Length: 152
Image 1 (tube, rainbow, N blue to C red):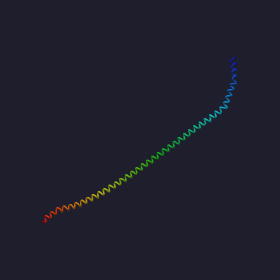
Image 2: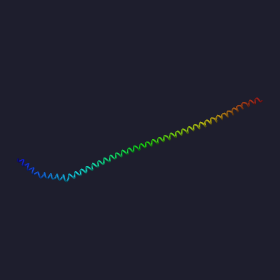
Image 3: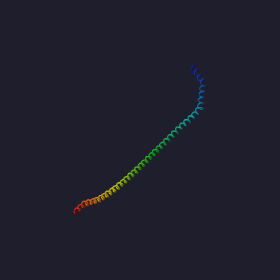
């Protein structure tokens, strides 16, 4: 029984401590905990808001990057098309110049052949005249001595 009495006295003497602890705990809840909770909630909201805003900015940047890449692909495609068109145009000009050069060469060959044919005909005519002249000279040189011997 003595122990029970001691426990009872101990409990009775601890009542002011328990009351003091309860008072401190209630004061903490009323004064500090509410403000702390509201500050923590605001901080969490700001942090989450900043994270969400950052994620939105990242998504927007990724979208713009995709658009820029698409525009870059289109620009490259246009450049390649322009280069291909220019190459075709240059090839057409080259083909036209080559055809013109061939045509001029053919014309020059035809004129040269015509000139050569005229030269051949002129040479044949000249040779024919010279042959007639030489034939007459030969005949004269052969017949003159014969006529001179007969007339004697």
